[in-house]
Amino acid sequence: MAATPLSRRMLLFGRNATADSPLRPPWAIDADLFAARCTRCDACVRACPEQVLLRDADGLPRFDPARGECTFCGDCVQACGSGALQATVSPPWELRAQVQDSCLPAHGVVCASCREVCPESAIRVPPGGRGAAMVDAERCSGCGACVGICPAQAITLAHLPLEVPA
Image 1 (cartoon, helix red, strand yellow):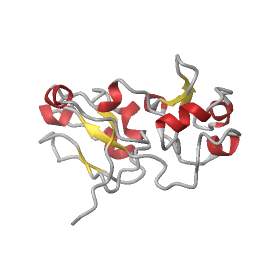
Image 2 (tube, rainbow, N blue to C red):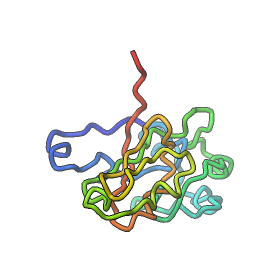
Image 3 (tube, rainbow, N blue to C red):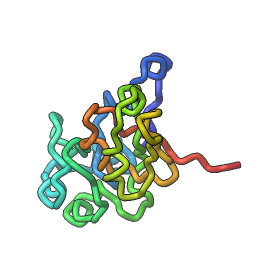
Image 4 (cartoon, one colour):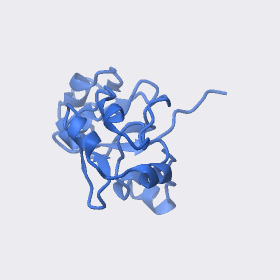
């Protein structure tokens, strides 16, 4: 997936680039190629055992992390007969969790829901409600397990490619 540019306004107001663009299924690497190849047959949606894929208003499948976690099982790719999803690419996408200002521990409330469900152990929460949760982008797979479980809806997924150290 090509990274959606983050405007100055979006950055200053804390909005992420995915707020306006739907999250496509894993291995839908290039948004334009995916849209051109997808036949809108819903085979990937029906094949998803986690039921986190659904049909968007434009008929294209999208990932909804509020419904649960993507386990990257590959069933959607195997069901896709059009080549819109390509499992030959790794990682399956460049999504990473981002913690917003509404994170409960940032406001002195003890909560670690996101940390508890993270299969990659990519989230750290300071003890005793002494600061917001922090995401290790190198460990985060963007699976979305933390999104739906957050009681403050403070976690979103954004296109954040891993930075390669110099």
